[in-house]
Image 1: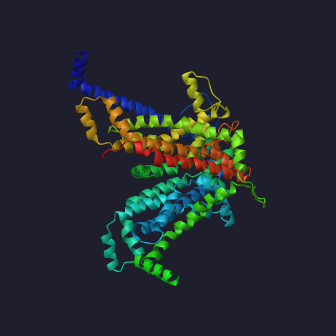
Image 2: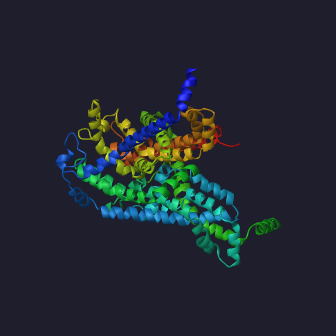
Image 3: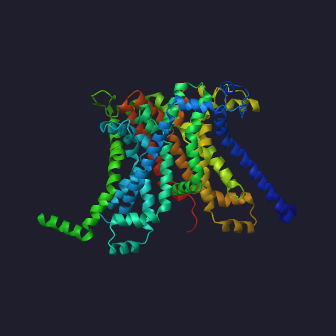
Length: 291
Length: 307
């Protein structure tokens, strides 16, 4: 009886619309509070990077500096060769991305379209690398790079990363969806395998290539443990490692300058992300489901 | 004998075309070379080194059998390291997943402005752990940091965060949740979008309320997603390194020395390569077990649509 009355009251159009609006408002409030918490460390970073030393060590902290101390950025730029670090990060991440796209496309084409002895075995061998994390290969890789006299060079940061089983599988999947008739037609026209891969397969796989490129670039740009171990001179450091050494060197005193340096290190990738956001989220989801 | 070889060659000739085989091997060679040098050889060599006593710089390398493992298992230090790693994983993952699911459910409601919120939640995931570790080092500053200021506002006693052995790990866990939330939200959102709308419509007609819809449709159909996130999150937290290296250097009193940090310390600070390799093998065994669980044991149990 009572339940019946409640059900009919709930079903009333006015009540239904009201509770829906209430639900939406609640959703907005919760999401907004959460978003503020997520963004607060970034705001705090930028705010500190613009404060004078006196204001950095004032309590309670103020979010908005009384006047903007841009000199923190100049100090940071002078304290460490950030231009060089930036170039290193950019050069390494770009080379790894390009290298990986090339090696993965070639391998994926072989797996998708060619017939050769040992195919199943090689496929399993590729698959098994997905189970080997870099952390575990660290010591022998260090020894290999030392034998090659590649420690503290760009080779150490680039070459070990220019193959990827994951990228190979992603591309193989895409290549297999391209109709075989295209290949037969191209062969009749005298197109070589490499020519076909370059002129037909790759242009048709552009979305996959873009996802792979983004994913590789971001991952490499942010990597920490590998460059920490494989480089030791200042001129070979990437942004992440350079920042860490600056923190050590300052001993946690000049926070205005350190936060300015952190802004310099994190802003390029954030801007890059804002441009490719949609694509990146899609590729992440894709890799998430595929991994 | 000769006939056998001839026959094999004839069979191969019949099955394969030599130019195709040649170009296939050529196409695979860059990947194979890189994998051999930096994946296959290292994994075998790690196993080999873990059975030896060897300090970098010294020529002699002595075979010691399972001695390194024995030392690890009997040292309280290594158990503490394992405990720290699992403390970090178990401390951050359940909370992270619960918050991520809640946020994803709210974000999935196709309201206006959701893209902005999504960007906000995803920002920490995009930026490097190293840079964010420096920011959180400042947030946890005992005198002028944001964290203690917030405690003051709520009226709770201040903490010494990173220099207190009891609070250093929780501090890293809080940062870890903040950092990893965005990724999990995106994966949950993808999972939610795969649930067909008609199920909800049918349930509504049968008089199901929101909770019933969540309990009997959303939650069971999200099990594969949740499971995927869980395994990936455990694997990733066992690999955590940068924040420990930058924020605490494994301290205070080893309270934040996690497994990869221990490996780094043994291998590249003390140059104790045998011991470090044994640590790497233990980590590999743990990660392999998790991957096997993901593929074999639990995946048939989760719900899938269709059939």
